[in-house]
Amino acid sequence: MRFKKLKALALSAAMTLSMAACGGGTTGTTSSGGGDTTGSTTAATTQSSESESTEAAAAKQTDGKNVPELTKDDMTIVLWDIATEEPNKSTQEAAVQRFMNDYPNIHVEQIHQQNDNYKQQLVVAMSSGQCPDMYISWGGGPMAEYYNSGYADDITDLFNNYDHPDFIEAAVAQGTYKDKVIGIPFGSLSGCDVFYNKTIFKDNGLEVPTTLDELEAVCEKLKAAGITPFALANAPKWTGSMYYMYLVARHSGNAEFDAAYTQEGSFGSEAFIFASDKIQDWVKKGYFPDGVNSLSPDDGQDKQLMYDGSCAMMLHGSWMAGSMAADNQEWYEENIGVFRWPEDTEAKAKGVPQDVEIGTAIGNAFNFNSKGDQEKLKAMYVLATQYFNDDIYNKEQMEHLNTPSIKGYESQVVDPNMKTITEVFFNASNVQLWYDQYLPASVTEVHKDSMSALFGLEKNGAEIGEAQDKAMKEALADQ
Image (cartoon, rainbow, N blue to C red; front, side, top):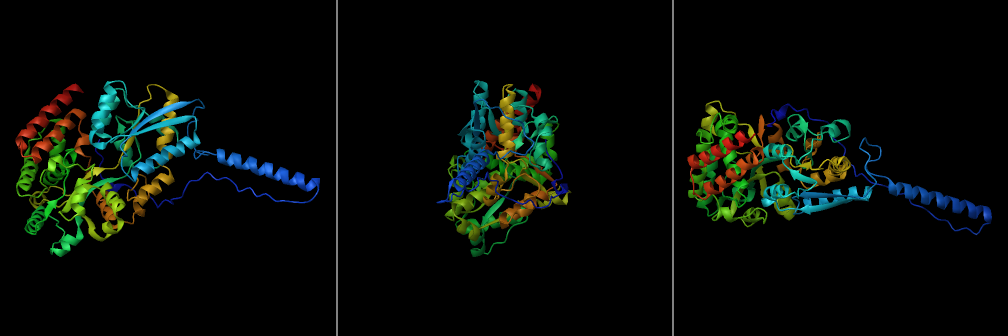
């Protein structure tokens, strides 16, 4: 379900962000020493104002919108997300609270799961009959498996017949499987670029690299200055995969990954071997921190290496801009810049496109596991489309340097780093969805283990290619 030619998407006019509020009138009371007529008028006015205030207080955020009528009976929705850190935690909890304020008979049990183990926990929950009613996913192969296993509802009819945000086409595509809408986007565009310390670069006379050769030259100068080039925390394994993906993409565009996915080619083809050899060469040269496979991004250990000046660069998703700004806005603005992953000049000379980027248009999506309960499904659809995607939610997204996957917001980006990331994203010929989201779940685990073995110098490119090919063949045979 790769989406193509994002630069061809029409950029909508800027949307006006406004705080959606349920307003109650202010009731003024006037004391009067007059007779009965004045007293009756005051009482009637007060009663009328109180009635208007009550009606205003009862107004829903969804009033006047084309949304399903929700049940008046008591209901509980179990929701899993991965919002364990600020600012996402507060933003997402507030969205749930706005929904429950409008629909007090519907209780949402919101459970924040750690990102590192989330996918495994979700699979365990599904296999044990404890799958949540509503849960975060990222589209791609795993979402298709959730649907095929009966744990993700087809919401095409709801999507086609009721209001929802004007999502960019690529986001809708990533939430769609076999022409069925399965997921509702609620996150943000997520590009993948290199964050770098501008102060360190300036102090060491370094220029932003545009080619892999230039990048390696920068790394050598940083090493000579006693600075580790890349801040990488690879305990969850998908973080190291970013380097692997970009090296493959720059060396072959999408061609070799596409062929490996269908097994008309192989994960042991030239581009994959090139990427594996390059990474292991960089590990041996000390371009990554010691103990890289034991460091955790969930604990902020990669960011800390940037903060204390131990490392100068970090390849990461665009959400890292908001995360670092939330930690220390002044330091972030003074020190952090962004550049796109450098080009492979040899591959470019052979005609390989260099504008394939890594990331996702969907950010996050909600899938629904209603177990046939149509009333619950309607309630979850309203929660996802009208509260996790309302003006309040999206205004907070923008404030925290996240760009919603909704037409028009890309033109409102003001943070210089996010402007660069968004420009790169929309100028890409293709945006390759993260391998750990695109591949079938069983292959994803093999791929992630391969990244740990690769950075740990335990297996070479041919060995991990063979393991990924074997897993992919088995996954295709099970379809």
